[in-house]
Image (spheres, rainbow over the protein chains, first blue to last red):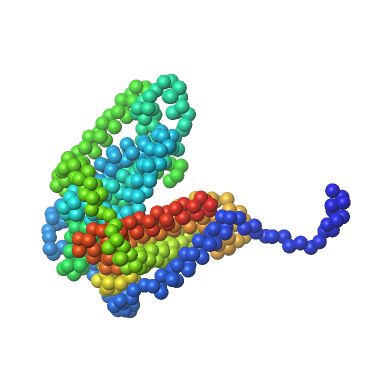
Length: 280
Length: 261
């Protein structure tokens, strides 16, 4: 020890103030990638018929009309509420049917409740379904099932199932393994474990995920109405802004959508606060 | 007493189930959706997909066009997310109760975020389309507005979780507001911020397809053209390209997330 000290006499050494860990390097690289891609993006944009100044002035005046002078001209208030009902209905149906299907699949996908192969297969199929945008699902279903609520619900359903299976199976996997083990030791079969332990302990989690998905599906249903002819308030919005160029009506429809979206968001935040007090 | 509690919770569950069944019936009635018919269509549709949606050599010739459009869409989404994240970072700092400057500014930034998040991206796209026209900027701006709203909510939560101790410690040493934010709060939430940005990029690529259909840009537009031409081989190639892109980005961002979080 003493010898070592003598061999290496104390010298002025630079003390590193910071040690770069792998995480730091990754963060820096990611920031660099984001910056470069953003700059690159502006070079490859297609600027066909784009004039910044007039566009901004026009948009602001359009938004002003939408905010300040909303009104209905092509349909009545009753019709408007009926269309909103359709959109909410589409969202509700695809959420609730999706939740039921997802519950079954999630039991197969959770690694602690299922075997390895089954769980891997279910996960891969779900990852594939999730990767296809919802609008493509709806349009693809529309070819075979015809335009209408069936195609819209089925398309949104697939995406909801994939999303909920991921959320549900994670909730199942986070469960206390002791409970399952204790039941197994007492001779309970798989169904007993699911019905008496897994579902009751995770029920509130599942419920708030389902509601969150309902909130997302409302937005999706509006989008499907506009882009995939699924009907509902989204279709009326598309007609008002791109067909009749009626900004007052578009403004009114935006108000309707906004009010419902905010109501759903408040409800879902309240549910979260009530069921996950630690996380909220 | 336990019995009572059980009975009460039972009653709640029954009430809840009946409400759901009623809602389902109501929704099915208003949307004219036939549950049975719908369920029968599903296997039919899947069978149709299997027999019609495949990539042929002919459609592979369209690959350069598709990849160019996909490229545009991916970079539009990244740019929109990054711009959204920059604005959202400021809104998040003003909006979090820990780093707020004053109450009106906090309420203002939360209000802006709520408005841009709760008005669906479709509405922004349609409104912007009227004056910006059919080009990438329209899609970029629509995605930007939506991302800003969502990311602000996420960033506010991340900043709130950052912990009072470091802020308090810095305050005790007499650090200014900017020093606290740039040396204490931001470095602490940076991994979470990046993780949210990655999530948003992925979501935006899917949304960009939808917006592309409406505004006539990127991969959505190409899909729409071949969809209307009933060229199923090309649309299955396009879908496949999108799936590959999304899954590659998903795998990469999961890897990054694992390292930084």
